[in-house]
Every structure is written in structure tokens, then in C-alpha cells.
Length: 61
Image 1 (cartoon, rainbow, N blue to C red):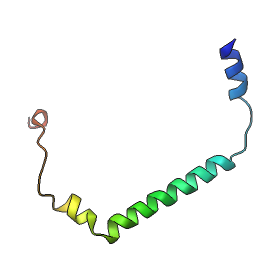
Image 2: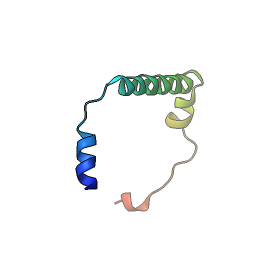
Image 3: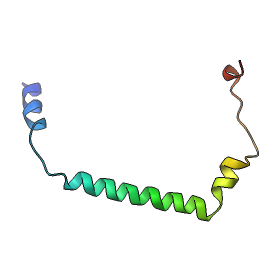
Image 4: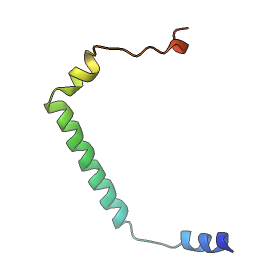
């Protein structure tokens, strides 16, 4: 019974506006976050010249 109702509800057509809104807002948030990393120089500090490396012994061969 529940699966039947879920199947019927899941097959309804809905508008794509909410998905488009989510994708635009999420993209803007990612863009702002990346701009922060670039403008503050964090990419170089955190990824290019780190001071400490974590060692994972299983990958050493």
C-alpha cells in the first residue's frame, strides 16, 4: 500500500523551478567560496606548500 502510494506520488510531474533555484544558489555559494580561497592566498598556503603531511602506511607499498 505504501509502495503504491509512493509510486504514484513519485511519478507526478512537477515544475523544475525549485531545482533551477537550488542549482543557481549552490553554484553562487561555491563561486564565492572559491573566490575567498583565491583572493586570500589559501590555495598556496594549504595545498602548494603545506608544513605537515599525513602519512598513511598502507599506501607506502
